[in-house]
Length: 257
Image (cartoon, rainbow, N blue to C red; front, side, top):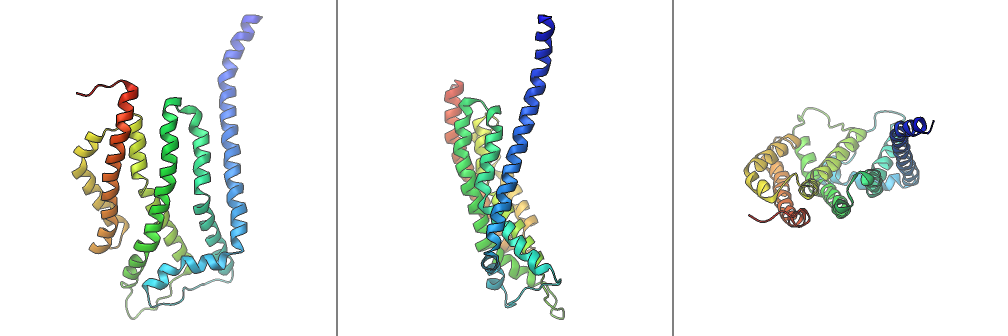
């Protein structure tokens, strides 16, 4: 009987681990969702000010002074959408911490410090990339896109589409600016080396310019505005990688050749 019980326990333990793991994931998702909902409700009260701020790149780049609303309920949905966008950007550090708390048990203790340090830089680079897109890239891009509108056509630009555009541009650029963080983590776990990154620099530059050409209008200046910071980020990633790799070699006992 004892053997059977012992055997049954060995079978049930992994199942219990999976159940607990999924339960923790559910709780963290509920927490993040409730945080976004509560912050959205609070920010909805200030939605008019948020909309004024979010439309600054549009007003700064074009002589068109008003965006357009084409539905009776679109005014409400526009305020709600702006509140959700603001909520997502404000709660990003907390969301990142929840992701870290979930994956932390699966990471070796000696590597946890690497991830904790990179959490700070992940938040910093995300906000830096978003600010770069919002303050520098968007005004130029909007002006360039509007210049393609034929003169004999009305410039009835939908406010909801505009919000979608600035959200994807700002969030996308924030994600792109995470390049040094991703490279640093991959170096810390031994998947990349500074010498490899330096050796593949010319290929990285080609990929960066292709990426800049894809995400920007068909204009050389806008591609330069995107590509130059990305090239700088790649060089910064190599520097981060060099420091991280020194620590990785010391911990792993890798000797210099």
